[in-house]
Image 1 (cartoon, rainbow, N blue to C red):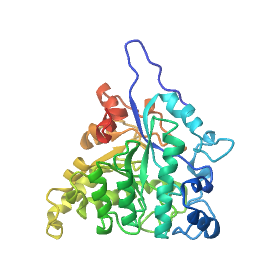
Image 2: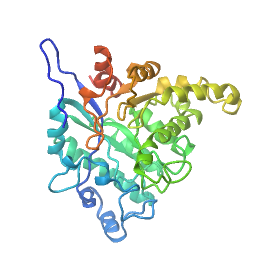
Image 3: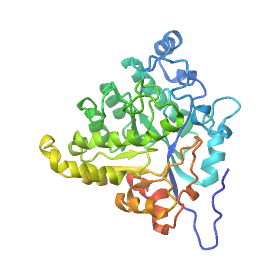
Length: 365
């Protein structure tokens, strides 16, 4: 386990905001105390009705420990299910000021039954507060919504709006339709009205949809790479279908999707904008302008070319005020905040990425 750099005389500890921590339920029954009896009985009798066929298996692909660090496994549950280990291995170790929870499993985002999806979303949000945020004030929850039941999703956002224990709204990145589709617009309106950023983190292995446009990958190596084209598709959809034009206050955090591809995507969309603008007259500006105004990007996983200056050039295009630190705890590719940069950066740039940018985006003091 890497240890953070030791402070030297004349230096101060950085105020770190981690935008990607994954809490895990010890078992499916962990949500039962937060659900109505009818839904507990439903799950015990019928189980979940997600979009993939092999519901009794790990989500595709079958990753070792489901992608988790083995040293994060407590005696009584799967890796990532222990608040005590989170404190010891990450929050206390790096002196994290604020940590954002991104609950990816068993939250209703991939559930077909619309009423059950709403019940599961409410339950996982209550579970985050009761078992993580209340006992650990450094943590903030994310509002998990059943995006394919927009009415319930809006109701969940409105139920949590104004509660400072929630930092953002979390949607599945593999919904039934592209995220720019009009059916999802009420969700964006509710998030913007509540002043809550939208968090998009690769997930949805149980969505039943291949992670590539050409079918299922053969290897986890391929699957891991698809976080990038998947994130590109999300950004493209939200921009070209007019979401960020329609909701000028909407802010979007792309978490664990990389970011080295952002300039190339912006350049490509701008080039085609001149040709296709008549097809999308709702766009008032070039796509790259929307990218630079509405999107933020997380450091994990940061690409690491031999010449680190190449990544610095990418960040120069995106803006040093748009990059957020993310550890991805407790996954195997966890990033230590004090070792994310493999090239020289200015102190003010490091401070912005490790905490300053997130405090501005999420409204922390």
